[in-house]
Image (cartoon, rainbow, N blue to C red; front, top):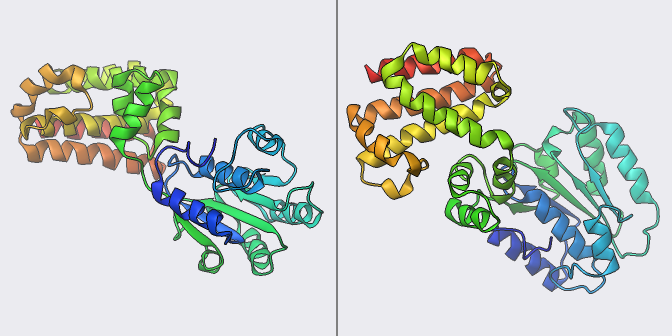
Length: 327
């Protein structure tokens, strides 16, 4: 993948290609933005460009060097990923040893640290010393969710390249052009931060199934409570879908937002357009405030799961709250 072929992120592209054209390549970069926004793809494309035999502001994608990068076997490109939950000091020390050797022929050595925010204090301090006195010519690319997630001392020694969530409409169109079913594409773009993450989620076999469960439960809540609790138990928590309760709840928030879209005349923005007829009848049974409360209940349950509340308990409490709001 070249810089130009990374979906979206025009600002990041301008920053990186401007440096490449001017020849003022920094010794360290911080690619900061939400997961799935294209940070990793851009890191590989930028590294490939720096190593490309033809030079210029983008990789050719065809020379031997570019092919080695694409196949993951270029000796001067090193990638560090968390060992378990964190990037450890031994990994940074091993990286430093690797970078102390002469390059395999290219002018630069490059290292990419994924999830750099997970570095232990010892690993971060070891890397900091390395950034303060970088061997030349070595380029570091750190990938993290934000500047705030990193030590200020590390941020101050890097060139920030910000990544932002992708445009949902553009991402949706690109997914559909690749063969993703339109209804799936319309849903995943509202659950992810960019094309890279949306493509991964859309390819999951369980996603279409969990979307159907939301539709079924969403229709049952107004009329079949507490029977809907049994439906949730049999269709979600006695199946593999239980692993994705957070996605289920986020889809419910979108389901309730669709109710508000119907009431405010914005049907063209529906995430569940295949349910437009039922939504148009049901939306007016509650106030906008009531639907908003149901949305908030779904998102609150997501937060509770992230705080280690048992997923089934969080989901059932959400269902109770949603049913009470309907009363």
